[in-house]
Image 1 (cartoon, one colour):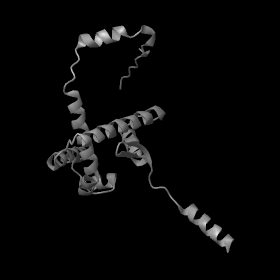
Image 2 (cartoon, one colour):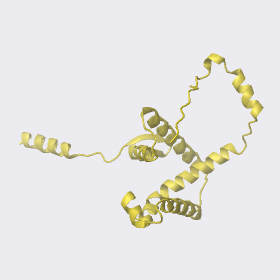
Image 3 (tube, one colour):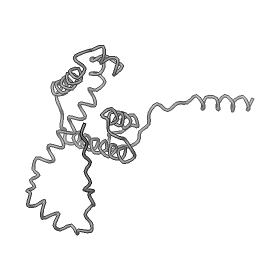
Length: 173
């Protein structure tokens, strides 16, 4: 009898599949592994190489966005339904224009209709707009003049400055 229970338990453990997992949490905002993966897929679709540094950079970007959204909620920054709809419409129209307004092609590429895609991205767009609005609020009182930038860099020791490769490649097609 005990052997049967162990075999049944082991068999169920083998059938377990992780659909998604939380990789970071900022305040009440969570970042899922699928969020990072979709950003990396988007990066690859735009023909940009995706290595370890790019993954870290993308995660850092997602963390910064989550932090902005978290503080936007604390500061009661909201975006209207019209703003969200307007931004989604603009994005969908841009994608459709790229595809010569071929809705069949859109469905083949994204695996869903335009209206299904609109519903899927609604929450992400609202979060993005909240984060953008929070960032604008933070930056609205920041004034930095070119002379202040020069003064700051003149105070940094030369041996602490990052080395920038001056090599340039030129190709003619």
